[in-house]
Length: 324
Image 1 (tube, rainbow, N blue to C red):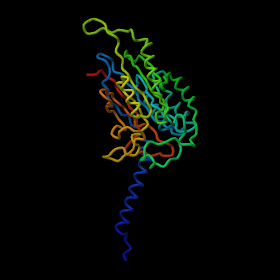
Image 2: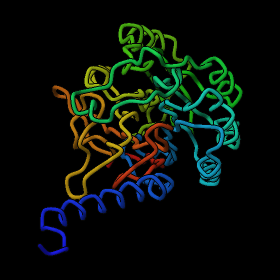
Image 3: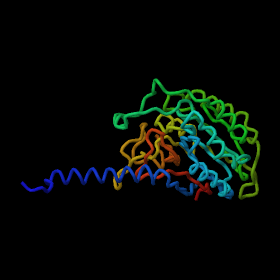
Image 4: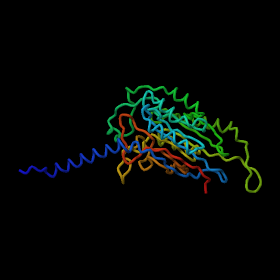
């Protein structure tokens, strides 16, 4: 017999080498290849000034992740008019230390936020193949994190909590109406409370009586842009937001699939959103209504699954512009 490897052994060896190379790339290179995605969204009223919205999500921050912290700090140089944080900021019991350092430059910039499951609970080791069976369930041994400390920091930044409630902001002369939910992945969303909060907001809106001149020289009620915010983009939440008149939906949670196949895309979403809408800007349709949907692929991973492939970590700068 020849000492050379049989064809099957050579194939197995090649596959193993390719797998090892892909893991090394995803773990050592791509998960640190932070990317800014920039898109325009035509949702503003005619004549409104553009609004630059920085959408960040899924930091999964650990205190030693200085490269990620410094990159997020650098985003302040974009001078956003508004920051939207769609949750899962924490990735370690002292992740708050890294979050404070990363987001400190945004103090005074208007912002809104919602919770993700990893703002409540620390990461645990999971079998990655379980995600092919559907969205992950709660881990019974997950460590509880100090979400109150996180909320106190966001309040110090001047950001507004949208968990199961609604709020309004004036940004660059445009009235923005927001509503959001607590983490849908854990079932903490209360769409009934959101509906009541929207009714209260619209009934007591301090800008409701403001008027703008129309093109014929008369007056009309100031138009509002309505934005729905959630951590996990479950269909029930997106559909409810659209029913309540949202023109733009912002979410995270999916990590863009985290490990994707070039030419195929994400294999899992960890929720019930279609795979083709797992990340990026798309249109969400429900009944006769629709809204733009931006799902962030996020900036981090669990410390127990530190790999990304064909799906680099990202933040998004959305420039809201007048609709054509």
